[in-house]
Image 1 (cartoon, rainbow, N blue to C red):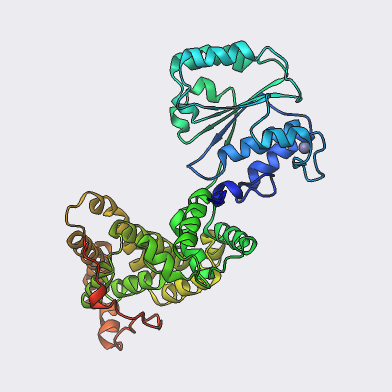
Image 2: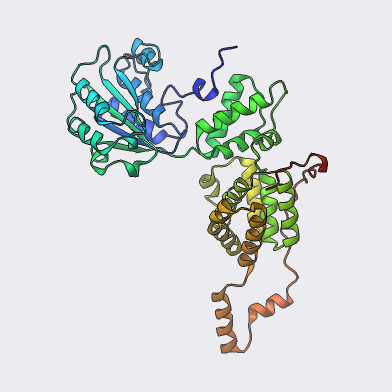
Length: 423
Ligand SMILES: [Zn+2]
């Protein structure tokens, strides 16, 4: 057996520069060290796999590094950096809050903080999942947290800040980590693939980034699985990602939305039938549809800033813009609103396929329906002038152009290979 290390561990950021998508945090921490204004307790908040513990570890290294670089990064070469990096340092203590949450565990910390660090400048306690600590445990730590010895720093990480007592939060400097943009994840994955000498198409990297939903660790785990699945092949394409994870391609999702914008029930049901036959994960499909409807809405309402808001790859943005450019912004808004309102229905449904079809048909009809305020406006106009110019214009106008994406059609799924699990 080779000594294989998963990508998420192998490529865990070691310096603030490596930390993707969290520039606001890296900048503040570096400035704090440079200006000598380092607090004694920090709380890193954010969803899983976006770099909370990693930020804490880099900060711990930077605080104790003997030769910090000009950019404010730990040097990764001094003994302190090496020991902390390998988890061998006596002065940087990592504690899992989920399994060490009793009063006795915390008392042990409280009794140990008084001893000076053995080698480093600071003795640093990194406590993960800190919301799991019991109230009694926090009470045991409260006094120490307020006035710890000068050589002690506490770095807490949590996914659920609302479960941490306000008295604790007020004693910490709080940092909220952001979900990492799809574009940033995709670029980082591209760099890693290059270094690992694996050829992965950009569309495939985009699909992985989309599936990871803002988490770098999830993205790297998906990439790992993908490389294992396609080991030996020359390159990995978007179709591989979609097949392994039951995802739907961006183009197919846009075709579903185009059918809805055209109010074409026949086309919509045809598209859904195809996707269901390919045994796509229908919950994921729906949530992807919501995501793409949001993208359409942003492009339709704010074309100038849409690229910066969405942070998606250029080719994806071009496709979304093409559809949004042909659609009516009001209809797009009602479509996005309708999809969002019905999101929970599919999750609890027993027959997911039927629920998906009915929900999308209803959302499509509701989005296209003439709105009550518009009807009232027309009635008022009729009462005043005896005619409705909008209606007359509509009657005289040529039929509205059909919204089209002009994409090459993916080959239909071969009947013989249809998966059994259709729901
Ligand atoms: Zn160092």
